[in-house]
Length: 102
Image 1 (cartoon, rainbow, N blue to C red):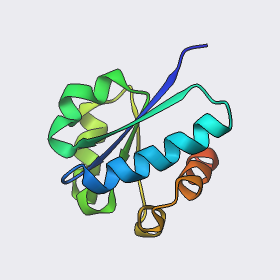
Image 2 (image 1 turned 60 degrees about the vertical axis):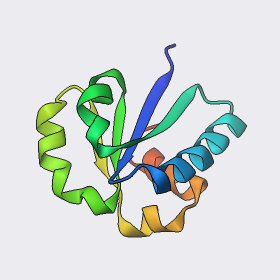
Image 3 (image 1 turned 90 degrees about the vertical axis):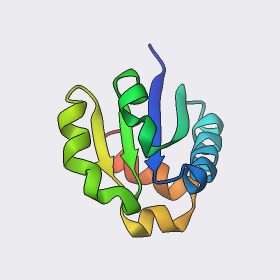
């Protein structure tokens, strides 16, 4: 089974790198073959087709439609302010599980 790749994007990549590392710890503890990386939104076209899931931080919610159109074979999920603001890897992993990402 191939590794599931998740990319988190925000306007600067800083807060998402913290969230991404917290999510990665949860997936590692669960023994899941899932890789989480964080990027500045300017990288979405470069990496968007090489990942299975794109997560968009609330501050770039305006980019949801264009991201879906630009990456039709990649699942795109808009994180809520509550999910993102929690800065809690487990909260985000559970939110993704509810959306079928596991």
